[in-house]
Image 1 (cartoon, helix red, strand yellow):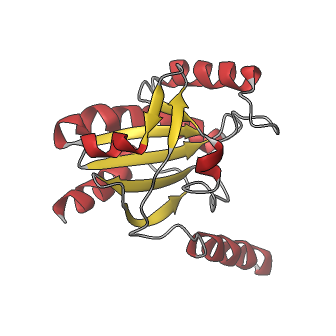
Image 2 (image 1 turned 135 degrees about the horizontal axis):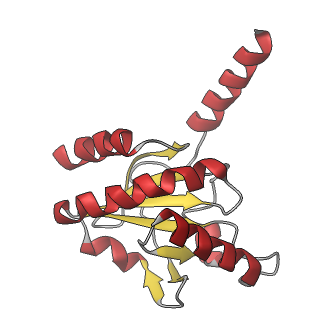
Length: 171
């Protein structure tokens, strides 16, 4: 029982200590999995952008991707876009690991997660990704590139994400 309590307490502290804060301006320049340039200007096209940071090694990340794909389609008309960031695609030298890229592409195809997926730049690791301690982590961003609320650690269902999106859109 003490062990379970300790684990729950650790998870709570980890979630609460996530330093990325509401109101932080998010700026970056990177490419997507197809090699097309992507910058923080992507936020201006939408009322809300849902940045989902995931890894090819992460079971919960992969399991939530079909729900994120449905969420993306269901919310386009509301000005909401889902964007993935593949956290483990770079090797230690900062180059794209082709094996991980192929794995990521296969996961995207298998899960139907056909929204934009970004290859993070070094700049992103010292910015928006600097405090990511676990995946999946999801950050909501407004059209000005400003983070909305706190970062969300862990996978959720389409229904749970939709409730959160609806709350954000009401504000």
